[in-house]
Image (tube, rainbow, N blue to C red; front, side):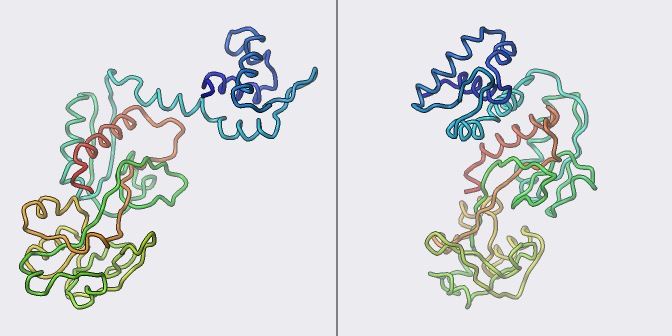
Length: 301
């Protein structure tokens, strides 16, 4: 494998157009820079730089490598900065918004624990399922499921959340267990009005594709906890995040159906306003939240 340090020197040579300038930047001899770039070329088996007495320029292969590797310094610095100062005292205030299910399940405890670990820090956490406007509503951090469309925001992927179709054993015994998605057309399906695809549009897998089936039912809600209660009461089948009904499934109060067909899985993201280097307290809180999600991975998958 090529030496990463050699790759960094190569990108600097392309950016500065000179072995001498790169030598000055790194406080090493010009000959060392030249030899290490030559070493990289020998390792890769391809010429990367055209050398002349007047200037240096990348070959076609060098251009490709540079375009792929030019951010390596910035990426490495961001990675080191993410853990730099973990033992330092944090201070300031964070205003954040989180989904109600994750808030109840783990985030309320996780975030309050984080405050206990850092006495100089205060956090105001709102629990809301709508995607708030971070800029207008003045939020520093939002935890959300779904997709990011606003290019003025940064989203860090945390985890995937799988959804399940479930009902009470009594309901399933009375109405028979569906064996394929179309069997749901004769079932009472409980609708989630916050569903982006539509209240009664449920997603399923067909080989490697996802398709939507329009179901129907006599009860819908914008609150997934209400749908859980309706399912527990034997009133129909609900399509819900696994984390909301995990303990019910384990205890046998609810039963999953169509497990091999369900096609809904959404990412959980930490979203914050676009900045080249977010505040240390935001970085560390995101990492703390991510670890808490990972510690309860069975609830989500």
